[in-house]
Structure formats: structure tokens, C-alpha cells
Length: 140
Image (tube, rainbow, N blue to C red; front, side, top):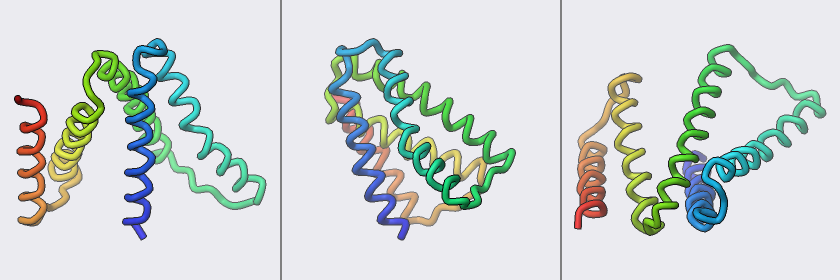
């Protein structure tokens, strides 16, 4: 089932990148971030309201709130820097892959070092190819 969610995430994050590129230089970077992040919470907020009205129990823990706040701050600041990135005029076809491959590499490092997750040889080769692809995108 996770692959379905992964596929849907790819579709919607592709839309995010595309529409941020289209919005760049057509709205102030910070105001654009406010609009994007406000509307990004609406689908989840509507579902939470529906669940509450249906008397469904919703799990809330202190660590869950703390990590959600940190994730929210990360996406908020990341949205600002993403809009700024596209405001420089860089092509969507270059900037988005550079950012996404960079995220893959950075989160892999966090997973291995902080969460003590392990990588097998095939995954390590994939990361190496990602680094090669990243360098091919960045350096002419």
C-alpha cells in the first residue's frame, strides 16, 4: 500500500514544484509562502473536522506535536527558500531535481546517522547514482 501513497505524493509534490515555479516573480516570496502554507493545511483540517464530527478518536501525543511543529517550521522555511530559488529564474527542470535529489541524500544521512537505519548494497549504489546525477545537473 505504501507505493500508492508514494505515487500520489510524487504527483502532488510535482504540482507543488510546478505551481511554485509559475508563482515565482508574480507574488512576493513571503506572501506566496503564507498563501501556499495556509492552503496546504486545509485538506488535513477538513479531514480532522470530519473525524471529530464523526466522534472518531484522533491520536495526539506530546512528541507527535513537537515533531509536527518542527516539520511545519521546516516546510515553512523550505517553501520560502524554494520560492526564492525559482525567483532567480532557474529552470524547473534543473532546480526541482537538484532539490529533490539533495533531499534524498540529506534524509538518507539523517536516517543512517541519527535513526540508526541500515542501508544495503543496492541502496548505497542508488545513493551513489543520485550523487552522480546531482553533479551532472549542477556542473556543466
